[in-house]
Image (cartoon, rainbow, N blue to C red):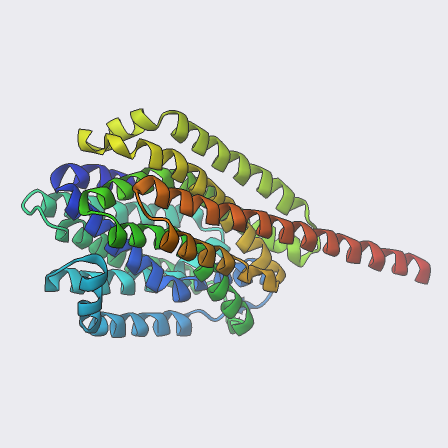
Length: 391
């Protein structure tokens, strides 16, 4: 549904305004990553909880309070935001703050509901928020040709989603006695790992807006939106599989990890292949005729987003292990920043920078996860042998 919003909005506002709106949303998502990454930590702890469940309302309220502060302080960054992304207007700043605060408030309730395997409820709530986003963005953009329409739709849709998720958590949390606080070490690891990973998803779009011309940044945003299909499909599978992977790690059983890795990799690679082969058709169907030149960036970014989808699964796996290797995505972010700074001549060049960073991370993270599983298998085998000898 969010893709549908981009399809509609890209036909209602100029390419330059579309690039501006996409870059603002990417920056907002980047700034919200450190606290929204609480979601996988909550999912991890809730999914392996046995008799005792997790106290969730205190971190939920804290996230909401921080969100309110962000909305109030958003005007302070208006000059810097304007210099970075070439924007103007108080509406953009206000909506930027509301959007950041809203996605911040979703972390705890969404993570808890996924950990409880309330997949249908989460899917319904997210769909309702996406429909509202589409409606608001369409109505607003049909009367205005600036970047406010898509930002208003995103902010209002996310605000509604956060509220509905909190309400849904309240309805089911009463069936559990919350006796265990969230583990701070898990929260720190999650924040550090996902900030590094998701930075790679945002830095390139922000860089394209800063370094490229307005129309070129619009082309890059279109290619990024279309290519991200590979990421979101594989990530949806990874999120659904994570509770089973976390329980497998807790029980020292790696079968769930290997099965999940095969499923996520197959889905990501298959989607990227389809997007790459059908790039002209995808752009023709999704965007107006003026976006046809985004073909090459889309082909490159479909591979980059497929790698990021697999990486999301690997980050979750290493979070379940509590491994410090979850910090490796920061190296990928550093590679991307350096590559974009050195090579940013065109939309395709920036896309190749993103693909390079994703490939580096994928090799490192996959190696780390395989090592973790082999070590866990070795420890289990040693423990069993010791037990048999003791008998």
